[in-house]
Length: 119
Image 1: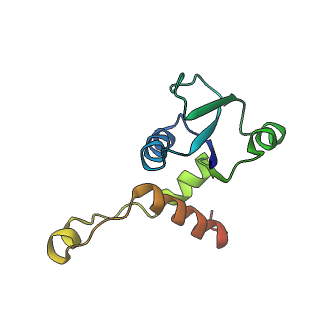
Image 2: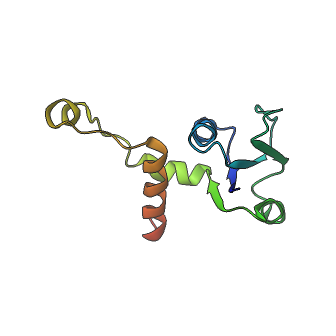
């Protein structure tokens, strides 16, 4: 069984990512590092761990055995927002464009910016 660690799960984007992962990968277990209350209490697919992402020791502790890690931090979201001001409606109606999954686009954008050290 795949185990995914997600930080920032209670934020705006994080909540959507949790729901998307739960629906798209029902065999996957999600380990959430939560600073606040757990909105998924009682969900068997969710393992909530209380902690703070700014503590390296806590992140190391919960990252053990994770297959993938999704860090949704303010800096990543701020960097990705530079590229999210496009309206694709004309491309959709005139060219048949299908938009990608927003979370996939966010991950790719953050990775692109990190590789190029854009702040």
